[in-house]
Image (cartoon, rainbow, N blue to C red; front, side, top):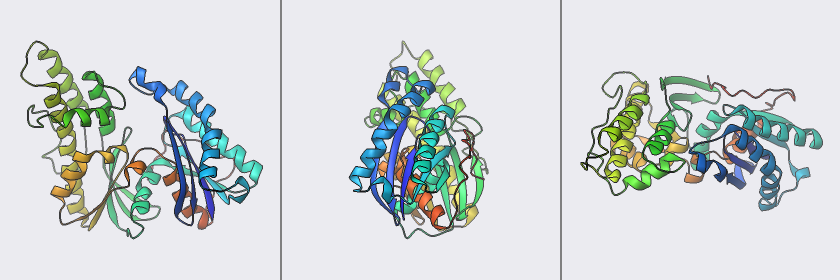
Length: 329
């Protein structure tokens, strides 16, 4: 089976070809137009998708040495995400599906992130705990089998990726904030500033990062004329506060669930300090991460998950809707 995957949930325009669980091509175009705004502008993102989708899909087909007539199905992200950008991808995919007379399936973006770990290691077995950490979500899931997911904990407010983006803006850095803070913090002291770590000592699996962002804002305002710490120290300390909470809750989730495997999914999974800290605290647990190219938004994970469902005979009706707030369970 050969499946085309289309991803347009936010500011990455992506297409990929998956055949028999093997990724033949994966093309991602990141929209640099948002950089000067310090965040994604939904209207601009939607227009960029409409401009790029046809070219990106053609490139994915060319790299995979595949023609449109060879496709057996199309998988497209239907949510969660920005309404306009989701609509651009779904309308494109529906039009192509109708023209080729092949099945289509709307994919949950969060589920695709989780299943990207099967691309990293096809031998991954259920059950496992997943830390899903991105710009829009910070959640802990117990994945017992395909389509059987239990939410263990989530953020009460900001997601970790959002905290990175907002923190970077406070520090005068670029967008996206996570890589900017990670790069700046490489030469900093992560213990220089004692930023708050919400719920870190509580026996629950909840997160909260809005207070941390506010603490950074107050710290910068009160220390403008002081030279107690370098900007590198502040970035490293801010990053460490986020990572300490993520890892602490992941460790607790693994112990509570009594599983032997955990996976990290989503854009923040690319953070090297996060990966190192997880390995140090879960040395006796099998820990998996997707390749760096599969951490951020991509269509390879969409095509892969879509093929799994289509192979089972599961597809979507042509009139399926987008859902910007689509839940996983």
